[in-house]
Length: 481
Image (cartoon, rainbow, N blue to C red; front, top):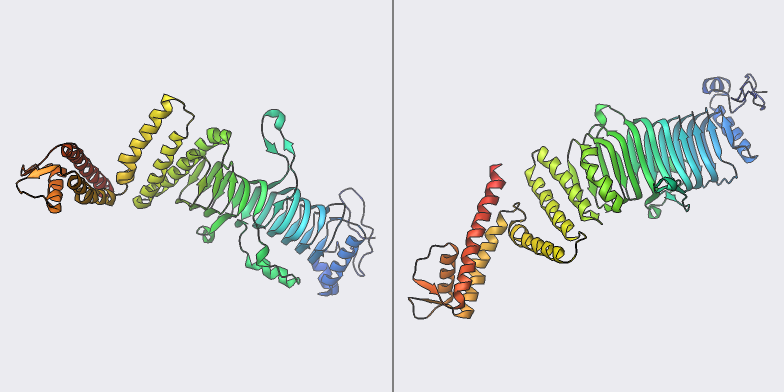
C-alpha cells in the first residue's frame, strides 16, 4: 500500500511505484522524476484519469503535472485537497462543484463547463481562468494567493434563493462571484482578452471561437479585502478591469495599486466601501441602475468611501437616477481640479449642474410647488445653461450676442417698422446700427424706437448688458484661475 496517510487517518490503498513507497498520484515531483524521468508525467496523468473514470472525485495530497478533464459528468463534486498541480484544464465538465482546498496550482482553467459551485480556498494559484462557464450556485475564491484572475463569458444559470430576507435585507444566497481575502494579486479581469489562455487551450487541442463571447452575469460580483502586488513595475498598469458585467458590483476594503476600469457594464446598486485607487478610475459606457434605498443610503457616501488619487473619467454612461449622475460627475470634477486640469473639470462641472437641475425636476412635488420648480428650472436653463453652460464656455455668450444683435433684433425692428431716424427711409443696415447702439447702451439719439419698438429696444438693452456681464465673468473665471 501507498505510504500516504489521509487527514482522516486512513492510508492510500493504491499500489506504490516500484522503488518508492508512494503510488503514482502521491509520489512527489522530485522522487518521481528520479525514478522515471519524464515518463512520470504520463504515469501520473493515466493514474489520475483512471481513478476519475471509476467514480473517484476526491483527491487529497496528489501531485500532478498537466491534466485535462474533458467531457466528464458526475453526481459528486470534484475536490482537490492539499494537492500540487502544475496545470489543470476542465473542458466540457458537468459536475455539482469543483473545489481546491489548501492546494498549489500553476494554471487552473475551466472552459465551457456547467458547475454548481466553484471554490478555491486557502490555496496558491498563479493563473485562474473561467471561460464560458455556467454555474447554478456561486463562485468563491477566498483566503488564497492568486496572481491572475480572469473570468470571461461566465453566467449564473440558477434561479436564486433569497437570503436574510427575515432581517429586512434583500440579498440572494446564490449567483455570487466572490473574490475575498486574496494576496499577491497582479490583475483581476472580467471579460478581458488573455492571449496566454488561448495558447493553453490550443496546446490541449481546443480552438475557442471569438463569436461566442458574452457578458459575465451574476447576482453580485464581490471584490473584498484584496491585496495587490506592490511591485513598482505594476503601478502604471490596469490592475482591475471589469468589462461587460451584468449585476451588482461590490468593492470593499480594496487598495488598487494601479489603475481600475469599468467598461460596458450594467451595474445594479453598485457599492464602493473603503476603496482606494492609486491610479485612474474609468467608467465608460456603464449603465447605473439604483433603487430608492441605494439612492438614499449608498449613493451619498460614494465620494467619501471611494478615494481615487488619479483621475476619474465618466464617459458615455447612463443613469436611471439624475442624483447618481450628479454624484459621479462631481467625483470626476473634483479629481480633475485636484490634478490641475480645469478644462476637463469644467466639462464635468457642466454635466454635474445639468444632472442637478434634472434631479430637482424629477422630485416628488405636486401642485403649486411643482409649478414653481419648473419655472425656476426654466429660468436656470435660459440664463445659466443656454448662455454660457454654467460659466464654462466663454465663446457661447459672444456668439449669442453677435447673432441676436446683428440678426434677430434688426429683423424684428425691420418687420415692425418701429424705428425712426434722421434718414427718410430705413434700410437693414440702419436697423442693425440702431440694434448695436441699443445693445451697448450708447444712445446717440440719431435713431429712436416708436410703438412696439420701445419694448423690443428695452429688451435688447437688458439683453446686451446681461450678456456682456456674463462674458466678462466667464472669461475671467476661465483664464484668471
